[in-house]
Amino acid sequence: MKATLTKLALATSLVFGAAATAHADNNFAGFTWGQTSNNIQKSSALNANQGNPNFDSVINNESTWGIRAGQQNDVGRYYATYEYISGSNDGLKLRQQNLLGSYDAFLPLNENGTKLFGGGTLGLVKLEQNSPGVSRDTNVGYAAGLQAGLLQEVNENASIEGGYRYLRTNASTEFAPHGEGKVGSLDLHSSGQWYLGANYKF
Image (cartoon, rainbow, N blue to C red; front, top):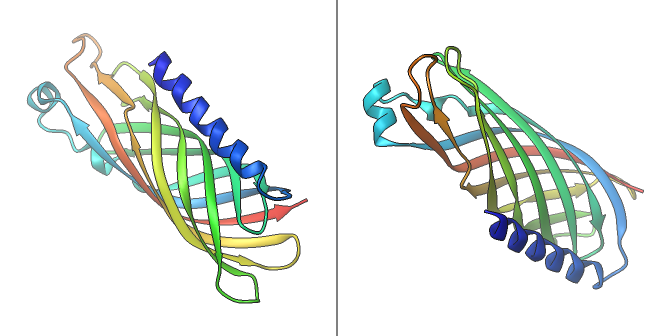
């Protein structure tokens, strides 16, 4: 795990460093709101001991809030994002936090500041299993993904956007009801998120 995180940090630094030297950059900050759905993979032991619990429905179109900051220029942007998601369903509860580094390339569509964007993301995902009657368990895994969308400049400093991001992760937690011990595990295989965002350059 330590070696993976080291490689992740190095790759992120190289991407950001290359982007930073390409053009003059403007700082920006913003926030996002979206809806996230997760693909959870469960161990066979968890299915057998708990009657095949439906963890996919716990974080399914759940509201997701995020803040981000970075730098951008005419050809692209690089930025860091923090996001928070939680959900509960049928006696199951999960909490997810994302810390991500991303780079997007811009494709201008017209002279009115409309741009397509697309790029890649690397980062960390913290998954917490906190269902009632079950011991809380937390794990931090790595994430890699892609995103794309449409950005519209409102004026010289402000812009709005909408997009979609897909992440693959390896975060996992154990499931241990009180008094029973571990009965299985679950893995966060992937996350998909539709989102809206607003940004301000300064």
